[in-house]
Image (tube, rainbow, N blue to C red; front, side, top):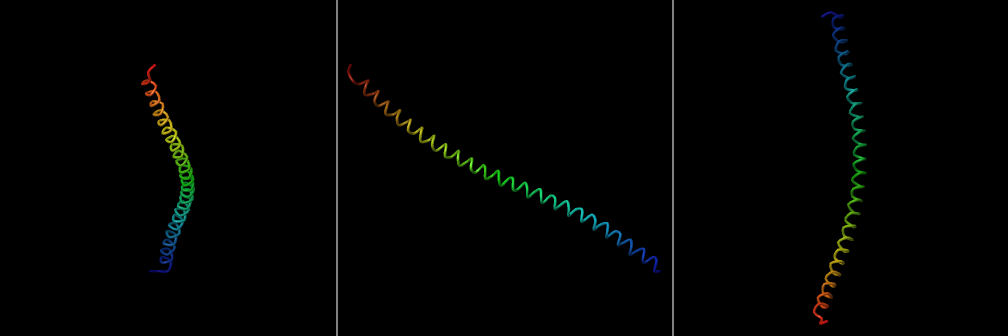
Length: 92
């Protein structure tokens, strides 16, 4: 193999390697961009989850308060029913 032919062969391989390296760099840049976007999305999701946890806690508190109110009303209703029954039994 003569020197010029060998040189052309090596330059051809180097050109292919350079082209592949450029493609890899482009892919890596795209991956970095994707990772940055994913990090932003994860941060937003974490914030949304934190907000949901607060909302759920508030709802639970509200339900507990409503449950207490309903129980108090049921007790009051029962007492009123007893009073009405006593009044109905009383001779007029």
